[in-house]
Length: 431
Image (cartoon, rainbow, N blue to C red; front, top):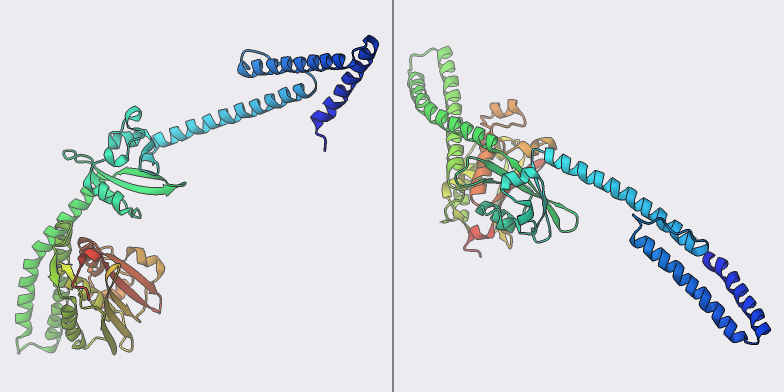
């Protein structure tokens, strides 16, 4: 199929050759006349090409040449493309200007990183938080400029579901939350937030809870002692004895809450990592099994499965607290005709301890908040069973000190499964 250009050019070429033949016949040199005519036509096209090139190089200063035929169509098409490009360039400049204005107004710092964590762009807030300089630091790896050990560990683990908290500098009382967000192909956003106020409020709250718990322990002990002494008086009437027994139950419950608060405060204020003392998990679970089977409030079917003789390297009191809290919760919320399965096993990913029950289950909207302090799915039932709302929070913090995580799977009216995953570095004596 002949294109539009050839439709225009071919008749003119044929007409030029025909005219050259006629002239050549008149002067007796047909071939020479045709060659001269074609050279003139070629020279004319080269001249038009020269005009087009000059205009393309200086289109801001020179008007487009007034050419007809295919060259005119090329110039018209080029003008349209140039105008479209100019429009899109202007629009892109406006978008970039708006984006820079938006990111400058953000309360958070934003850093765009490449595949190797090299800095490609950052907003003014990130420059202020991290001390970055636009002309100097672009192209450098972010971990060469943000040298806090916690951030380096965060990058090495490549687990970016949660942010890492770092101090801005050794002397500054400013804390920053750093979180990676994947986008594009291999690129990442580093979101930087100032969480100094939240850290200070959390520290004040922890100090208050710890101090209040310790201050309450002594008065509670005294009150419980007097109540026990009064309850042992044989001359008490039935009404007074009932009141004293209720006071005993409530004081014991308050003592349990205070003990849990003290344990939680100790975990939060302790070092970030638990010691690496050997804990014989099968032996520990065998002792707990004996205690559980002696409890009158347990369900009818209770099964312990110890699939590995390996132990854990950690703090025995904290591991015992993790296991007892999860087993205790399962007993509280599983009916008498229900079933509880406790299992310990080891695989290539590390060690795992799980407690599965056929109890009431937990609705999905409650799962993200289960490890919060004093959070209860059913406050009435938890209070009736004597729960403090601190057990799972203690489990979470104790697991964090051992490098572990807590997985929760639950469905309403189907039961729940709580699984503790311990890293391979914390497993010893694997069989």
